[in-house]
Amino acid sequence: MIIAPPRYRSHLAQTAADRNAVAALRHAAFFGGSGLDRDIWDDTSDHVMITDVETGALACTFRIAHLTDQGGFDRSYTGQRYDIAGLYGCNVLELGRFCTARGELDSDVLRLAWAQLTAVVAAKGVQTVIGCSSFKGADPAAHAQAFQLLFDRHMGPEDRRPSTKSTETVALDTQASVCTKQATRSLPELLRSYLRMGGWVGDHAVIDREVDTLHVFTALDVAQIPAGRLRTLHQLAQSCA
Image 1 (cartoon, rainbow, N blue to C red):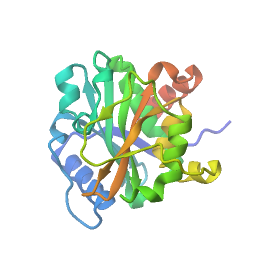
Image 2: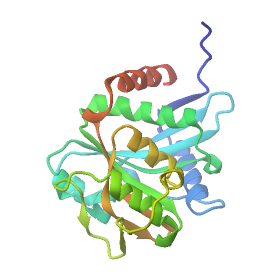
Image 3: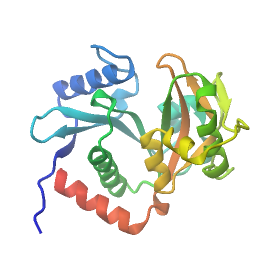
Image 4: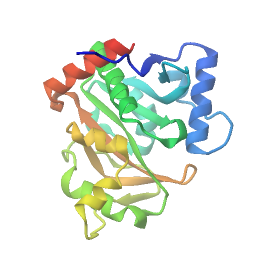
């Protein structure tokens, strides 16, 4: 059997040029046009870069932060928007600012992103991965079916779900009539990926008017990921590093 060489490789940003490339891709993805997207959480995070092996172009980036104590939880990007006290005491990895070049999410890029995360999870003994899954457009009505689908099928344990903290929120229980196929297609690809591995969500969305999105708290308990899937992701991480 002939095994094709990897199309992408993953690594952490190391230099000022790396971080500028990350910030430029984020600005293009979230705001459009040229510029640099930076915030106060960048200095306390590692920044993953997935690049095209042939061209060297940055195809995807996201940041990760290791949360191990209450102060870290409360200061985190997620903790500023959701009351995540139900996760205190857990070893948590926060994923944020996930974006891709031209807004396209290549399946190979997504697999490699999860492979990189899996390597970090194993190295740090992480129990749960958390983040904010974003829906384009801040109008709740546009996402009513998707929210109801999440409420009906993917709610997390009541004692671990975040309670409301942000001033502008929308309940996922919209009472909308749901076409499962249509609602599933409208979920962000990264969120669908979380859910396929056993992930869960909170009971409300937060409105982010600056980026014109609605985002939902998302969590994945590492113990729920099938063992075979974990092995495959570990192997992929090693081959593309």
